[in-house]
Length: 259
Image 1: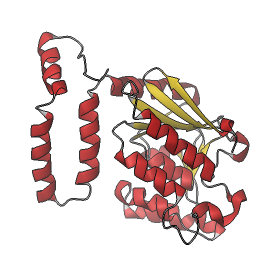
Image 2: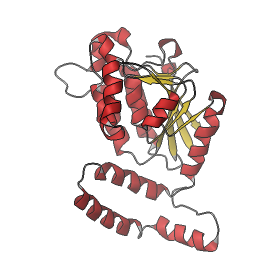
Image 3: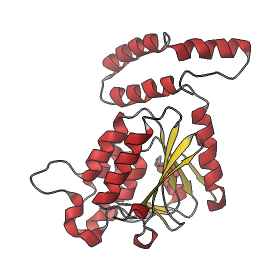
């Protein structure tokens, strides 16, 4: 991998991570996944980074999934290693307290769907297309299912996985895959709107909230409610909670502890 295959750019309050492999439809190989993981790990060490944007170069593809030109080795490091590079990236993303925004600028298929789904928010251009065509190359979107099982109804999962057909951006929004769909010319403006909204909130609250969302997904109702009761009590005692209440009563913007 050349350094240019993954671009990392600081733009205001956001860190942009761009898969720069337009000729390969921004497909991922091991080196790209490792570079993305490193960029994300570095971003969380900077309190001024309030959001991370994942996208692909150009306007044809967000990410076409694994680079099949590398053979079946793209799906695993080998039988002696139970973790994949995609799995390592997914674990890193799950544990960070900074929101990730998927800027879906074109085709989002196969592992690209997993990359999009691991983000907290997703914005798609109208011309974007989504799908899980793995069955056409003799495999199945196993890792993507980790996300889809909690995100989509089983009928929608079956439709995507079993037919291998592509759907348009409007259908993706109907299913719940993306938050919004806009004309391509408005894509960056919509992403920037989300960045600004996230940056206006408490970084402490966001960090604790992301952890709570992930934890409660694995709990039954009684455990989730008890956990939430404990977490709101802790959140109410933070400096950001005191500042947020003061700012509300004084009718002024909050001055968060980490910004």
